[in-house]
Length: 299
Image 1 (cartoon, rainbow, N blue to C red):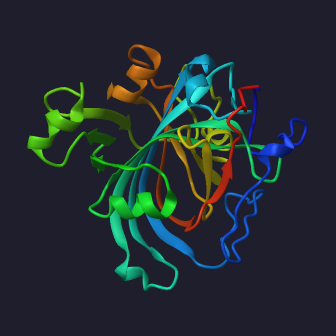
Image 2 (cartoon, rainbow, N blue to C red):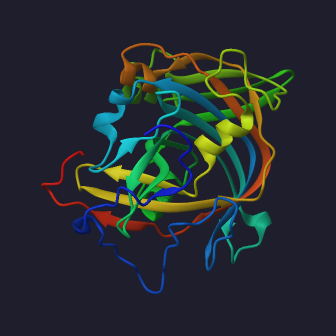
Image 3 (cartoon, rainbow, N blue to C red):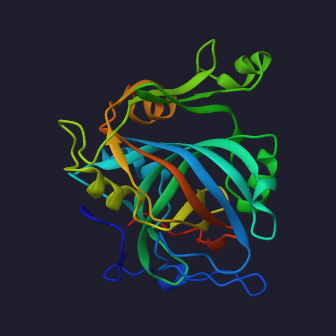
């Protein structure tokens, strides 16, 4: 399904057997939430000091094994899109806490945009998390609260003169690299990209997107991130909203992307990167959950 995907798709409803969800206590989920809307009730808040979204076009069939039943990649220019989203997050804390007590951390997730079944029986465009990594001692708390399988990595998002850099290594400790690297190389390098800065409203020459605004709408114009657990046949839905932002596009060079190399069987060139800074965000504390019947297959 090609084109803008920030709206729901009522023409392809989910089967009724996929429409069950659990609500704990009085938690209710607005699945048509706008990306710039506020979250109600208790939630997490933080400030994204730096965010680098490096975007890669991939053949849609490569994502098939990663999709839940009744899902399909959202396409632009005939391609599916996998993004390496590297973030420096500060003042991360529940709304009841004073902001200065919030945590500081880095995370890097590989994500795609897909048409996904939601618990109310409608398919919507949303972020599907393919791989989640966090650089913080409290990684286990993030796994427990969100049910997203974060791995602890060494992640950096830095801004230098004329460039931004994002990198991820397999371990915080040299002695763990061979145990956890598994082909990442002797230095444990899993991801490294350099982005020219400052960016601007135009995408680089040769990009499949005409400008930063169109890339923003397609890749970031959604309010839900989802994590699929194929072993338990369960999907988690987490809302994330933000204040209005100014976004820039820039060329990106990738030195290593082990996840995409494994996914596509070799290196993949980035189409462009999107940059943003100093954006307040809100994160839901409790995900919505949907279980799938064992016999449910792909469309």
